[in-house]
Image (cartoon, one colour):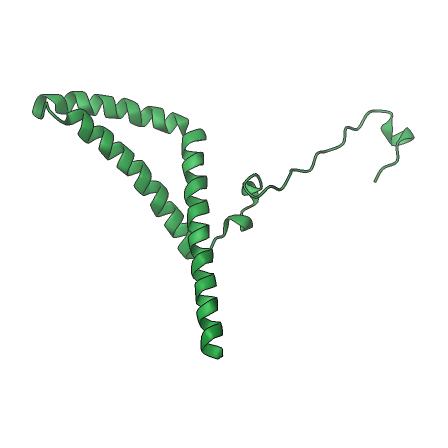
Length: 123
């Protein structure tokens, strides 16, 4: 009986870790594409210059090599960061700025007019 309960807890914990890793991977990839757009433009510029330089050394696959290296660098950065956050035990539900991820709406502030303190009920 105790053995069955411990194996269920292990399965639940591993599923929670996998879920956390996948959510972190998705979130970090979206943040890289949206917020990190200037970084992506800078990497594309450096990649173009690097492929032009490498074109004289190895003319067949310079563009493919540089593009593959940049894509692999981005993928590995996202996966490594998601793995570190998962192994540290940081769950996406615990992060305050990720309220958009799990459907919590931001509280809207009510408009306060100049005459409102005299005429409105303050809650």
